[in-house]
Image (cartoon, rainbow, N blue to C red; front, top):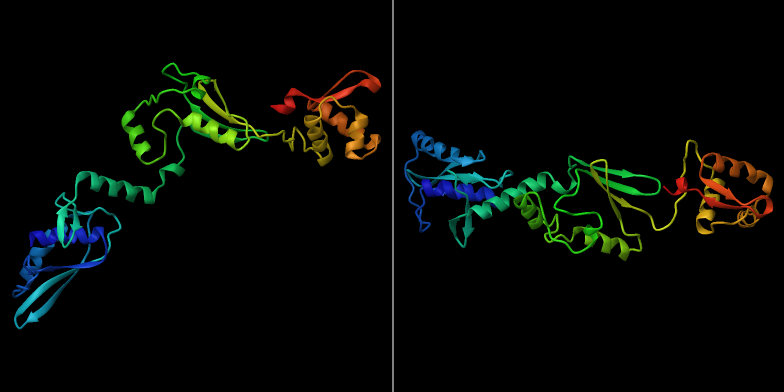
Length: 289
């Protein structure tokens, strides 16, 4: 019965199937008189399979007074299953021992199907979306002599834990040769976006992504009106223009526009240079940050 129990373990790895006890290696039915004692002998063998399984056990008459024990198994959910610490695989019409690497790979695939590591929140990382940028912050500073500038130059891979890094690389989660930051820069520039900024501040590393053009805020201490946002957008595209030009572009009269200029100036979003009719308007630095 010992080889057959290993076959039962194999059945759980693949698909639904049957293991027949009292059948010789040449698939010839031997059979015997099956008693309660016989079934009791099978139970300890089934219990050697890990993780535990609960097969259906039947006795089938093959001729008068002779029976074969059939163990019906369904596909195991918690694969791989092993019999006394050894997992098996099917090679042709025979059962062969599964190597440790094959068993580990099946185990990793099982765990990954239950919990996708790529989408799990990672301790020490935060993602923040602002009105004019996105920031990814990692606690800790750069080591091994790396600086934000050097990250955008060819550099080697210097992981803290090479074993963990190698496992992530094999899963395709990380790069292996220090090309991660270079690849990010290539992808952003290919789509027309500015190269991301990397800065060290307050014991953290911040990667900052900015949009390709200025996007006016919707709120700065108070909600901005659509016309106020149009003024900001216009000044970002044509800095240093006067009120007359702004009136022509927006097609509004000066009187209703005055309160908008006063609000934007009070909020520190625009600044005026020059005097009287020669004065022009610019976006303030605070509007760009």
